[in-house]
Image (tube, rainbow, N blue to C red; front, side, top):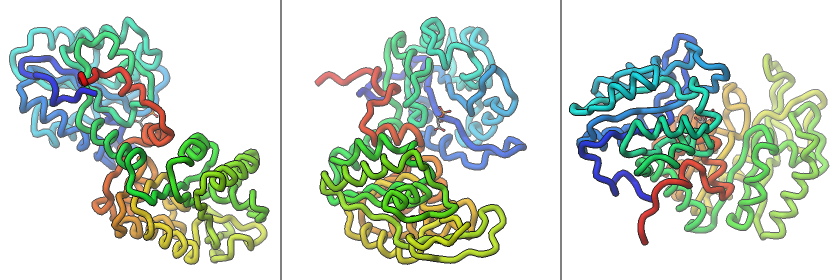
Length: 394
Ligand code: 3PG
């Protein structure tokens, strides 16, 4: 597709769909601004190339019925100004934005209120898409994290915008995943974790022909272990997916993919107030206990598999890493992957957060800003936010 570099921005009104869906505490302090920082190269490029105005559009959270203070983008304005070292004008309605933006002579940066407060956004309403497109000469989609959504500002707007291109973050994300999955240096290992098979089933079935090793941890592995007749006692198991787990294992076998499952686990008598925590073989979980992390023998097994891989894709933590007693498996695995020579890529959300908390962020080859979007890319889907952008002539 065309990127920002392929268009002349001078004197143009540029609308950039960014993903500023950042975590905030109860006092609206942003606890992680990586998504804002990740959009800066695109915004700064437009400033440096003399765009006459820049309109930034994002969602925050999932408001259902219009305005809600906790989801207002006004809480982002100051941080954005500080990071850009520029004034940002916050505008909460389209008419004002249109009026302010119509005769652009000086370089101005507008931040529109949460796009999900507008009814047409989630409905991908064509009239609303056109209204948005009319605000600009050039539409830039840099919201990788939201590019799996068919919303007005990520998808429908492209039907009306005269010029529509990808921003630098979008390009970097797509290139990183293409490198990992389409042109990988083999062997390629997929490390999956997190709590549910159900949320990753499409990934597990579609990715099999492309990978060499499948490393499974997290609560999701409990379901696989139960499928192998281990009694997981009080552990989280998706009983409805035991047959699916068996099919995944058969599928792996059929494609010559080597599967690694936990051989030992950290178990606890209680997740909320643990008193008794121990390590047992995966087949010997004690009555009433929950498996909450991978054990040391599993870490050794997984690290050996990782050491012999040249490309590693990681999506999903190995245990309840938010609780310090159950975080060792995830954090140590993060260190192993970080220290390996492999091309290492992390799907967003929890895994990116875990890598950050493990202090290993800098050593990974690429950390995606997208959770759901990175999963869909791994599943081999074409992201709607990418689909309608202008193509380069070949
Ligand atoms: C995310 O956080 O994954 C993106 O911002 C998308 O948000 P959504 O799941 O609310 O569409």
